[in-house]
Image (cartoon, rainbow, N blue to C red):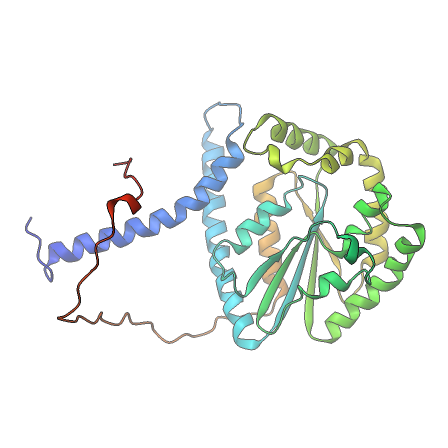
Length: 307
């Protein structure tokens, strides 16, 4: 079939190339899912498993489309959203954050994952270092762990005094009420997994060289102190579940179901609607008769090893 710039063959090839670009972009999602399955038992999937995986991808992509609409609405209206993700180590917080942010604009949907406070930050008002990460108008901020560290790891590991711990519970309801009065919407999720599931996920990380970086000495110690973390979690939920910023529990033993359930619930928490956008037209490229491209030295080119 002859190739003509304006002919049907040319249009067919161009459309095929666009379709391939579309598939390539969604391969990224498949890569993340394959990473979750790499240490599986090697048995072929049953028909039910294949059907569920197909449903999972279909629902995930549909809801990611809705998240794009939500972000457009947030940007246009100047809404401000804080989403807090808490839970035990290996509970699946990072996985759902990846799926939420994957197709969103990182300039207006940011992830805040703060390291342990330094010496200077330890002398500040406890909430001070978190304030710098709060959203401006038209922004969404996802906290991968948050100021609730004080009610969890700091309490269990003895990194705060009893006085600081009690002061946190006196302050945090007022702090969150103040934020909501200023127009910031706060959505708080606790990812819940079983003792057996955390053990399995930790073992998976230990035996997977590509995941060992996820395990810190603090994570391993948290495994030993499971019951202490349980007690701390129960106190935290009881004392910080307020009408202005309630806690929502995500059942996280099944990662895929947890992601879909969390994203679906999140979409229901923000009163967004689809924003009509003007059609986008790609402008034609300008051509100049005197333009000459400068050839780069071969030594600068990355070797082309793959066909």
